[in-house]
Structure formats: C-alpha cells, structure tokens
Image 1 (cartoon, one colour):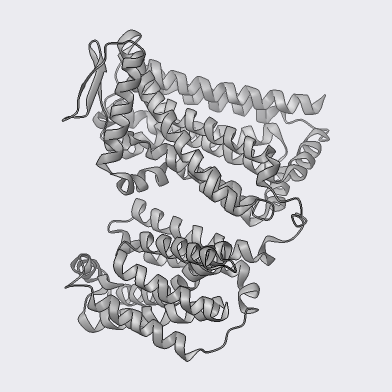
Image 2 (image 1 turned 90 degrees about the horizontal axis):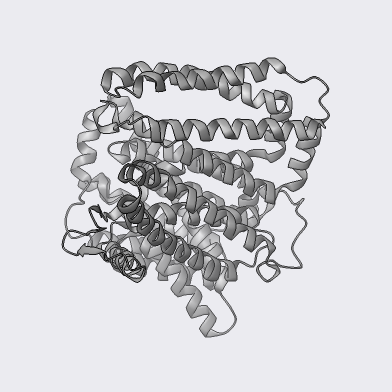
Length: 528
C-alpha cells in the first residue's frame, strides 16, 4: 500500500510540474528579451527541458542499476511514518510558484519580472526539499546516492547541464550545408503533405499561408545531436562491460544521430503547420520552446530501451557487474576523456574568454583521473628514448607549421594583464601542468589505448583501419588537420611498436613540452 502511495505522490508532483510549464508557457506571455534579465529568463524557461533530461538520466541509471533502485523503493515503502508536513510544504511551494502568474498575465515587463524572481526562488527552495521528503525519507535519498557512487553523481550532473552543453556546442555545428539540407527537407515534407508551402533559399525562410519561420543554424538539429548522442554515450559508459563496442559505436550512434535529425525535420514541419492552421503563439512560444527537448528526450529513451533489449549488442560472456569501475581499464580510458571534453564545453559556456576557465578544466581532469590512479600506475612505465625523440620532432613540426602567431595569443596576454601577479602565475602553471601532463595522458589513453587497440587486428586491413580511425578522430579534435594527422600517425607507431600506451604518452608529453617551451620563448601562450 505504501509503495503505491509513494508512486501516487510522485505522480502528483509530476502533474504540478506540467501545470507550471503550461501556465507559464501558454497563459503568461514573457518575452525574455524585454525583461532586462535575458539569461536568467532563459534559464528559468529551460527548467522543463532540464527536468526531462534529468528524468531520462535517472531512467538510464535505473536500467544500469536496477537492484539499487529496487532496494530504494523497498526501503521507502517500509517507512512507517509518513511526513504529512512535507506534503503540505510541497503544495505550499507549488502555490508560491503560481503567485507571479497573477500579475505577469497582465504585464511581463522588467519590473514585474524582477518582482517574480524572488518569489520563484522562494517557491523552489520550499518545494524541492519538501517533494523529496514526501516521496522518501532524506536518509533513503542519501543511501541511494551513496549506492550509486560517484559515477551516478557524475551522470546526474551531466544530464542536468545538458542545455548548457547544447548551447556551447552550437558553434561546432554552424555548418551552412547542414542547415540548408534541413531547410530543403522540411520544405519537401511540407509539399508532400499538400500544404502549398513556400520557401526562400536565400534567406532560409519557409512557411505555409501567412505563417513563416527562419531556419537558423541552431535549427539544423544540434540540440537533438547533443541530447541523443549524449544519452547514447552515457549508456555506453554505464554498460561498458557488456556492450559490443564496435557494433555500438559504428551502428547505434550513427543511426541514433540520423534518427534525431529526421525527427528534427518532422518537428519543424509540425511547427509550421501549427502556426499556419492552429496558433502562431502556440507554435513559437510553446511547441518551439519545448517540443525539441520533449521529442529528443523521448527518442533517446526509446533508442536506449531498444539497445538494452538487443542481445546482439551485448556480450554473453560479459564480466560480472560487481567489478568496481575503478578497476576497469576501459572506463579509465574513456571516462577521463569525456570529462576532458566536458570541461572544454563548461569553460566555453561560463568563462569569457574560455581560457580563463582552464584552472577549472585542470580540476575536472584531475578528478576524473584520480579514481583510476592505481590502475594507471600499475601499467609498465619505462623510459623510452625513441618515444621522446619522435615526440620532440612532432613538437618542432607543429611549431614550424604554425605560420605566424596564434589567433588567441593577444587575447590571452590581455587576460593575464588584467589579473594579479599571483593569479597570472597560478594560471600559467596550471596551463602548463594540464598541457604537458594531463592532456597527453588522457588523450593517449583514449585515442591509442582505447580506439587504436579496439579496432586493431592481426591483418594489415584491420590495423590500417584502426590507425585511420584513431588518427582521424585525433585530427578532428585538434583542428589543424595536417599537423594533427602527422602527430597521430607518430603516436600510433610508438604505441604499436611495443603495444604500450605509456610509450605514446611519453611521445605526446615530449611534443607538448616543445610546443609549450616555444610558446613561452615567443611570448605567445595561444600556441598551447
């Protein structure tokens, strides 16, 4: 009876969340551009998308750790004392969150928005802890977090900040060809539906009747790529011990990204039809704001359920799930690299210039490496003169092919000049520490230790494919394709020479020492 009661309370809270979204999206007309607090307004309006991403992340954790969540449910159901006070506070917080709708429905200008913010914050501070306590005792929530471990916490943080990741990654997908193809296929779909759609390829504007939209770069599907790709990668991380990695990355990920892009085309076409035949406001303010996150989140969850039930994508001889992840070499090769990539997105999203956030990136990289430190130390680490010599050669070539000063050198100089002397020294030390030690270790573990080793085989075809995949991915990450390809080939040779990732790390360290030394000598820190 109490288990059903817990689910009923969760359902009530879900209804409250949906009610808040509907009221503030469709009945209160808030133009973030006119509030005087654009970023804060957009952050508040992204709450539904963030909540859905968080819910999906929890669903993935339930798939990965069913025994933990089953025991959590049993512990909560066995609680003999229900906190009615928590339920009262949950409803009180909900009521407080509704108060601003009373005066915002008349006017949502800067003054009214400023009045609403502290009320929303107060309601949120009341409803969140009350809702958690209403579902289960706080001690049970603590038990759940401890049982999920640091990986569970990392997953929850990752999915919570997915909106910021999507925004930070938009410049990476500002590809006119992709935008044009999305624009063209939306137009074709509307014509197939017999709508009499019109389109202007020069301005990327298309519509039906009197309603038209502009297909901007962010409409090309970047949010879908981030959401679907992020959850697919998350699943691979949580089930790294059971999935068939080659099939998963070469089949599931491309198909998932393709499905998200197709869904994005259908979403835009539906938006145009809603605007033309139902309500322009519903299309732009409601469907456009929320449908992307809703559709892409549901798509990601559906893909993961299909993958989870597919025996061909999982190994029958998988290791026992009780193996600690800190003792798993595959996790040591992948997790720090994911943290390294996310640290770059976080720095780009929260720091201007992004380089200002490099100390935070160092902290994130260290936090990702430390759980695997015993595993890393146990590898054969022996000085190899050839690795250092080849790596130094890579560094010299990298500098020689620079072709002048870096584009960010002047910006970094200005940034350092604005710091205190101690702050500038600390920043430079951490930048060198990350560039010379952490980045080579993380990148070589992933590109050579994981990718190259994963696709390598005894025949020359498999080996050539492994070198091409690992080197190509390495070059794409670094942008300077010729130099990075050459560096990737050298590091691949060093690794394959004795099948020791430590040799590749040494070569990469040597290359980065040369580059860092040249950057300091030339006074151009943008080179590193």
